[in-house]
Length: 152
Image (tube, rainbow, N blue to C red):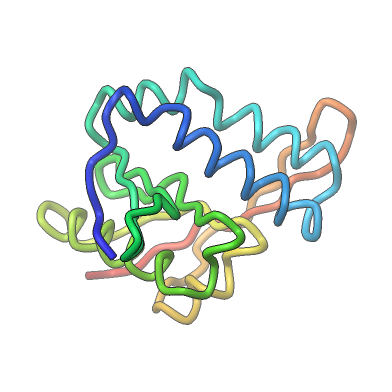
């Protein structure tokens, strides 16, 4: 596996990874309004801004297929998604470790907003829950997530 920085030509790839993962995985954990909130939150505009700022990275497997993405903004890990068909093959771990190394170059703490479906992974990696949030979506559904931190 290899990790490379995304460029402007990768917008559709990052969007596809993000939306496919949200649409396939999140409905098992969240109501429809929360899933729609996540899809809107990870809009083309938000992804483009992060790519243009040099914050987005892609994971390629040994066959050269792009399997996942992560965004690193200051000491925060954002938008860590692995296509469902590649989950369990180490791409998520590679992306997380890469993001942690990038953050460790300038910070001593990592912050991540953890969705319900990813929380267990972060707990196993030494992250601690520091805050719990709920957002009421437009249709009245609740989106719940934890802010998690890890000292490095």
